[in-house]
Image (cartoon, rainbow, N blue to C red; front, side):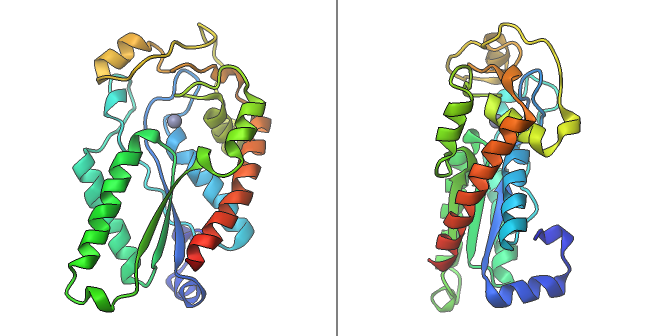
Length: 248
Ligand SMILES: [Zn+2]
């Protein structure tokens, strides 16, 4: 069940039985020569949509731009300042809590977002604590889960890609997007087979160190079949984790 494909009476009905919602959150940034710019937003969106369809969970529109400053030397990348992202997340959360949602499950697709998401959570809680009638409101809880850290998913990825998974433009995340959007697969020659590894500094330095955008990965291994296995493993555990959180 997706919020943007529902009518308001349907949301009102959903709220009568659940106050919990999944919000996919990611980034629009380069993902190497064969990865889609939307990878970090699409992965949580695809997984959340499957979980939503299977378990009747409401899924919010994807917060699809995040912290991608260090990818700005690659065309197509779009980034938010941390302060902008925090402000937008607060508005997102306040809109949902205004309608009665009290459990906001943010399913994240981008490691670079984690610090800012946690800062936004602190701001959201701060706003509630200092709201005039704060102590009379039902408690609002935010939960952060990185999709690749959903129970069991790491093991599935290790089994599929024992070599060349890497840390950016990984074989697993590219596979998930290929599963979601098989027509968007890119068949290009990638050299070297496994990308260099190292520390991320600023945007220009990133492109100097990692000329095609990948870090430590061989995403030529990506496939629709691998993506399907990862999504299926993630969906099962995401539903269980969401239900626990919804009842917390
Ligand atoms: Zn990514």
